[in-house]
Amino acid sequence: MTSDSATIVALATAPASGAVGILRVSGPAALEVGRRLAPGVPASPAPRHAYLASFVDAAGAVLDEGLFLYFQAPRSFTGEDVVELQAHGSPRLLRLLLARALEDERVRPALPGEFTRRAFLNGRIDLTRAEAVADLVAADSEAAVRAAAAGLSGALAERIRALETPLRELHADLEGVLNFPDEAEGADAEAVPRVAELRAVAEALRAEVGRGRLVRQGARVALYGPVNAGKSTLFNRLVGEARALVDAEPGTTRDALEARVEWEGLGVTLYDTAGLREAPGRVEALGIARTRELLAAVDLAVLVLPPGTSREEAASWTREAGATPVFVVTGKCDVMPGAEAEATAPPRVSGLTGEGVEALRTSVLTRLWGGGTPSAVALVSERHADALRRTAEALGRAEDASRVSTLEVLSGEVGLALEALGEVSGTSVSDALLDTLFQRFCIGK
Image (tube, rainbow, N blue to C red):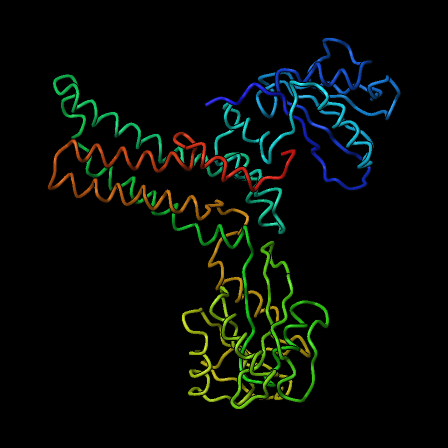
């Protein structure tokens, strides 16, 4: 696949006032168009050299002074000739420069993500790196930034290649035996263990989709439990500010409150929910219904119990979370500061004094993440997981075929696995899928 021959242009910076605004042009006419806006630049500018230039309108009047940079194909982000004009960040000025570039009939506005799409189509990056660009732009936590940057540098691409290369070699061996049985005799001798090993690798990659979602979107954690257990005070302590109203009267929280925090680089959305109890008022009942809906959607529910709660009561409250994992703590430990906790009792916390809060934060991260560093995860997306599922399923059928079916069926299933995996790396991907992927990019990237 190759990109079309049109030269594209877009603003590469946000349409808001700022110190610097960038106009990006890519395609065969990029240099000519760029020099039309900056006529003082030499006809054959040195690639990757910054020229101080005046940017002019159609009449030759100077609009601004800034930097002109030329990236010669194929040593540019898109693999084409690229010109960037770095002007002052006036939205009106940038629109004038953009309109001036579009006066050339060879130039059209870039579509969302089209610069990155051209980089992929021209072989500058594979599809995992292209998707990492969008992940990096959208990252809103340190872990997301670092994981996306790792993907951009090829961390996920290397793992996919480590699966795709031996899979392609296996398929070639099988096809060789089928088409040239005399010359390729014995090439399929180790097919069964090779298939099993490749299937295990695909399943291991697929298993990281949950971690990838946590890094990309952040984790969701809800504080819940009976009324007057200290949930709102604990919520305020975890957030670091007084977001929730706190009062001695039970049922103060009528609706779910949320706040975004970052723990060890991982983005976490915390929810303070309405306390659960029998026979509440009408408005409070609505909040309790909202709590139950929220508990089904979060990644972890922290059950905050008042001191003196029995094990039977704790078990009953735990069941309220349904299938959502639950971490149980005893709140308001400041009310009974001298009490000795049993060895099997839940951890004690106090939102008022801060006792046990750091330990709670560590425990929550451990429950969410297990071990390792969030920023070290491969950003395996739901799309990747689906392709890897089909890869593993095809390899599973290939294992079965190796025992009960023909070599043709075995090779066919390995080929299907290779095709599914190619949707991750980009070696076998449709235009429709590319359209869907790059629509989530911003214009100018």
